[in-house]
Structures are given as C-alpha cells and as structure tokens.
Image 1 (cartoon, protein in one colour):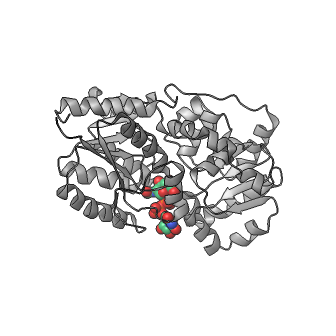
Image 2 (tube, rainbow, N blue to C red):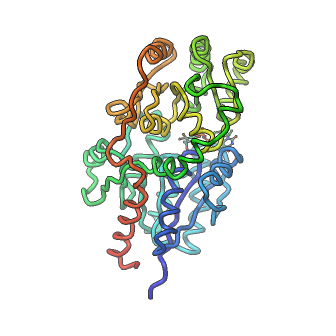
Image 3 (cartoon, helix red, strand yellow):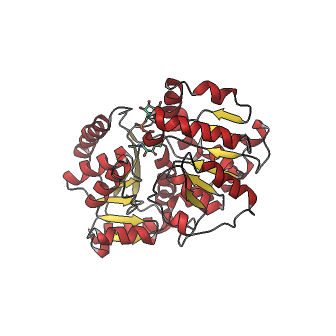
Amino acid sequence: MKKQPVIHLICAARPNFMKVAPLYHELVRQGWARPLLVHTGQHYDANMSSDILADLNLPDPDIYLGIGSGSHAEQTAGVMLAYEKICLADPPDYVVVVGDVNSTMAAAITAKKLLLPVAHLEAGLRSRDWTMPEEINRIVTDALSDLLWTPSPDADENLRREGVPEERIVRVGNIMMDAFEMLRDRISADPILASLGIPAGGYALVTLHRPSNVDQAATLRPLVESLQTVADHLPLIFPVHPRSRERLKAFGLWPQLERNQSIVLLDPVSYIPFMSLVQQARLVITDSGGIQEETTYLGIPCLTLRPNTERPITILEGTNALSDASRLIGQVREILDRETQLETRPDLWDGQTAGRVAENLKNALQAGKKI
Ligand code: UD1
C-alpha cells in the first residue's frame, strides 16, 4: 500500500485560519492524506493567531516558519527562504495556499519553482486595483496554481479571461461558511456582547486595517470623524487591528476615540467572539475582504470603506455596499430606516465546501498516481 500523500496547508495571517481549518478537519476525517499545518508566522500575536487556531480546534502548527512583520519584500523573501528549506528537506505531495496575503504568494512561488503542485483556495477574486498588495498576491498565485478553487462565478470568469485552462478552474464555494457552521453553536452562545452590556442589534461593528485607509493621516482623520458622527446615532464596537492602533496613536486620533462614550475600543478578538459580534450587529462597517462575505451569509448590512471590491457578489447578491468617509453617515441612516434584510446565500456557500475541495484534491492526486 502506498503511503499517505502529504498535503501542506499554508497559513500565515488572521484571515487564513478560518479557510484552512475546515479543510484540515475534513482531510483528517477522510483519512487518505496527511495534512500538515505550515504557519509562516506573518501574524504572531496570540489574538491574531494562536487564539484563533484554538477557536477553530486546530492543533499547534506542524511547521512554523516564524517570519514575523516587515516590508513586503522582507515578508515575501522571508517565507521563500524558510519554506524552500522545508520543501527541499521533505517535499510534500501538494501545497495548498489560501486567500491573498503575502505568505500565500510567497509559498506558491517557492513550491512551484521546486516543481511541486500548488492549489489555491479562494482563487479568481479580482479588485482590478493594483495599488492593493493583495491584488498582486492574487494574480501571481493564480498564475502559478495547478488547481484554482473558486468561491463564485465572477471568479471563474476572471480566470477564464486571463487564459487559465478550464480544467484547472473548480468552483467549490466559500470555505469560510464551513468554519462558521462548524462553530455556529459556540458562536451563538458566546458571552462577549453581554460582557460589554450592549443589546443585540444595538450597535455597529467596525473593523479597519487596510494601508489605504489607515496609513495616511489625511485619509484616516476623516474616517475617524465620520465614525464619530455614526456613533451619535448608534454605538460602535471597534476591535482595533495592531496596524491601525499604531497609526491612530501616531496621528493623535486615539484620545478622541477613547473619550467617546458611544465607542467601545477593544483589542483584536478571536474568531468565535468576533463572529458573535458580527452575528448580532445592526450593521458592520469594515475594510476587510472576508467580512463582506460573512455579513452577506448572515444577512447583516455591511458598508465597506473601499473604492472597489474583489467580492462583487456580496453587492450583487448580498448585503454589501461600498462607502467612504463622506457617504458613510447617509448610508448608515438609510440602513437604520429600513427593515432588516433577509439572509442571502450565494450558490455553494453552504458549509460543504471542504468536502468538495478534498474530493477534487484526491482526484488530482489519483491522476498523478500519488494515491
Ligand atoms: C495582512 C494582509 C492583509 C490582511 C490582513 C488581516 C498582506 C499584504 N496583508 O495585513 O491582506 O487583510 O493581514 O489582518 O499580506 N502586527 C502585530 N501583531 C501581529 C501581526 C501584525 O502587531 O500578530 C502589526 C505589525 O506592526 C505589522 C503590522 O501589524 O507590521 C501589519 O501586519 P502585516 O502582516 O504586515 O499586515 P496586515 O496589515 O495585518
């Protein structure tokens, strides 16, 4: 009997863990492969990494590269140098990368140059905004990947237009919904909101971390002012990303947020309490990618502080709308004036994505005679 094929599941930063976890658990359950969790260490604080792994019932990583923070070049090169050694010493049978962070692209380049097969989970998303580091990561990763697992028809179409052969494109749905469904009961029972003394439906949840929003005072100041105006109508709960906290303090904007009685500032919270805050929010204001999808799935109105999105299905079929500092308060008022929206579920966002991914991976390995 052949030995079990080894699958590297690459994770690096906060939004990766909820994409890797359902696949890891599914592969363990099916038993035909040996999934190894490879954590690059791009995010390393407990509340950005190990707490989230624990919420998702993931073990400690099998391989930890420990690359930490740095410039784009430093992070990318750090992962490539460290991961190349791992692959040379003990090459895996397949490398699975998820999402669009620097480590996603770095691991894909490294593996492909060693002629190892690569699969990209959450392939095909495009914002067409080349100022976003994630857009470059997505395009490079997709260009290199042997299997492109997409969440939505627009992603399939983007890849076709870029000349990706049809047989590489496999629509599997949105794996983050699997993570939510896996933990739905614990999310619903989480005490975080009660501990803050705010009623369900009585607040807007805010997240903000994109360099284009937080790195320049000229952009961040008007955003903070418009958030303060929103807080006059609806209390805000704002778990603050380390990058944003540092910028808010550097630009002297932190004290006014802290003084505002209608704004609750928190450290970043782990997956289960965070999703509990999303689930019970009246609306969400964010610049995250994944939260646009989670709010669509849960039927929570979402205002995305960006000029574009790589997830247009959340606008066309979901609860999302683009926003900016000048439009925000008007859009919030509109949401508060209308009935709550119904949950919308784009096709294949059904909590069953990990099963489809595992099946496709198994077929690929069988075709390559690895099983
Ligand atoms: C990264 C991803 C982004 C993703 C985001 C989610 C890239 C290009 N960006 O952005 O796509 O949406 O993660 O959070 O890969 N820091 C800490 N502790 C940590 C991690 C970071 O304090 O555990 C601080 C450091 O000062 C670091 C800064 O946050 O320099 C930014 O971290 P980095 O991983 O470079 O980018 P993110 O803004 O988190």
